[in-house]
Image (cartoon, rainbow over all chains, first blue to last red; front, side, top):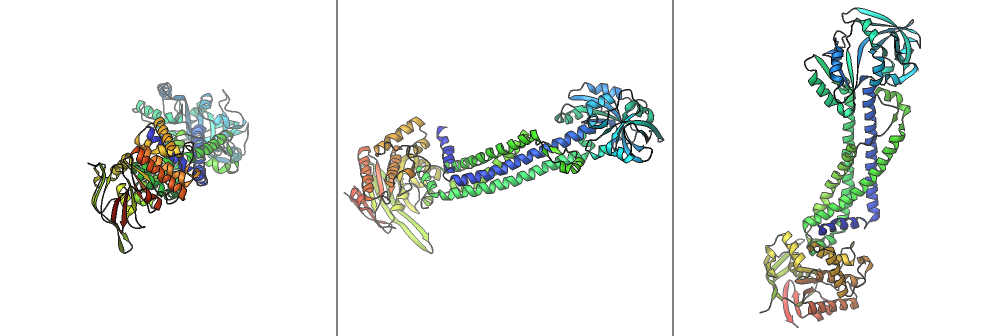
Length: 410
Length: 229
């Protein structure tokens, strides 16, 4: 093994024969990899925000409905015996919380105005463990226990209706049988989430009162589940489907409920791969250029080494080592720089409040916290090393093909 | 019966030079015995370096036969020739003989490392050979910290350290002043005498020619004369 150590040693020393060139090449590599690491962390950070915000603002990780409800939104497609389902699933592994809801589109009216509304009948206490709605209260309070006519609504919707805390609100919706029913509520709180779909549309009322108003007895439209983590969602959904397969229910993950969220995830992934491809090309060009220059400068030395008995394979290994060292230096420096920035900004956050309105459409917070995920880091470093390997193979192959007698004439 | 190290017969080698064909070797026959101190002399273009490259398994003739240490060089693959050079041959070239990123000790030890010798042994051997060529104390110096004469001595030490059957030197004094040139040749003569190492040197330097025990005179790719002095 000892004799193999000569190649990294030679590679390392050869690199520093031209310190300025090596420094410039590694600096270029470092800046590219730092930028990519940081961009990737930004990407992962806001994707995580989108996922978390989308899933936890209202939707939850997994929802169970009567079959066909999500597409039709018809109240007639409801679950008559939610307690049995709740009992069946509440002890399953990876289930952190379960709650029931009624979800119905209707009309909200005040003394002077009307507006379309998405009404949620929720369990006031359990809902606080499920969604972030209660944390978005901007004035007033969350649904008080025992106040059956309490309503909390988005501040945008309140503005449209020109109402505030303590004002009367009339909700009207079609009941399962098709008739129209209305009910009076009193505004107890306003929410501001930054998400326009929530702030401009949502009305939250106690589940019991919603069931009574809509004539649904004990029935609900949604059973909402919070999983222990995002990674647990898909396996849990699979297990739920197996367990509930004969009850005419649909089990949907958060990304099934809104394909936009999944598309954002796919887009972010595609974007990362495109940037990775660009980095590979840049690394390839940079390293290829440096290594070809290095090779052409050392033709005589290669001839000498060949004359001394160095084989083509050993010559090839030496050049590959040199390339790898060059990229490892640049890659390590770039990763430390980009990773350090990502960690620092991950703590501090990057304030992009100027674009808050645009971000709210995408369930993004105006302050982004870059997230350094090991798989992204490995992907970047892997791509850089792969690019370097490809680039290094060309000069290494050329060096290994040199005839010593020809090279010695250089 | 003499112990024959090199046996070359009817070696031919031609190069294309533009539209013309240059005959670098035109039917060379030569026998070199072990322990010989042979100088190939002749004007530039006479075929000295080409013949040296053939002996060094660096180049192949168009036709002819060539055996070295009993092995047919022309039957070997490129990898086999590389291994053969590593085990049997040492080289001293005109200039830029050393690997510039290695110091004197490492340059000498490099071939030993390729041969698989462990670090302690090869460094001890390198230091011994550097001392033998008068470079004790220069072990840590890199090529750019040594004179041309010192570099050539390191190259000789490297060639000898590998215990080769044959050392091939191509114009070893060409880039040295007369004092360093004489000193280098004296060193080679001494090592030939004391170690029994075979030297074949291509040179038109009178100092080198004067040191020859076998002088091979070449012209136009042919051997004009072989004189045992």
